[in-house]
Length: 190
Image (tube, rainbow, N blue to C red):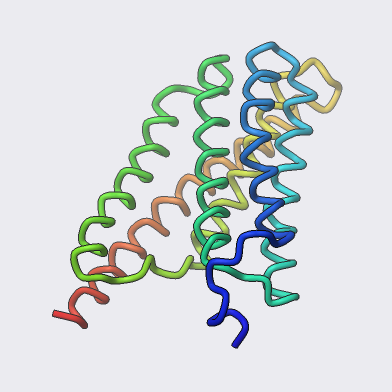
């Protein structure tokens, strides 16, 4: 009932954590492009933790809000974009992987006009989308750690790439699930 009364509440702990993640993006990019890989790794780890924490806190304490529903995925997407572009600029990941991941974003974003035209809400996040994001937010920091000269670099690189491949596949799978869900939503109102 509180959620309906205050759907646009802004000042909540989960929203503050999402905002903190957004503010960490320039720091992460500076660290990565300045070859401070271990520090960049820790910024990604902290970002991943705050991503988990904001959702957990929002659900546990009924602090969900429309602002949070917009801010959290925005922070996720911008971190993923900053991460893959930064890693590609450093030649840690190939550019074609950046294109594959960004193409999925464009694919999902392309449904926006249809949703607006039919006055439909953004579909709920699927488990596969959450799993994809989890794989990517675990995989890319490990791939970054794999680019260091630390003793665990080789193991981190192998494990990181396994998460990245699974995450990429799940990312596209979730995108197709969103497409099906949106098609059904439009059919229901047409």
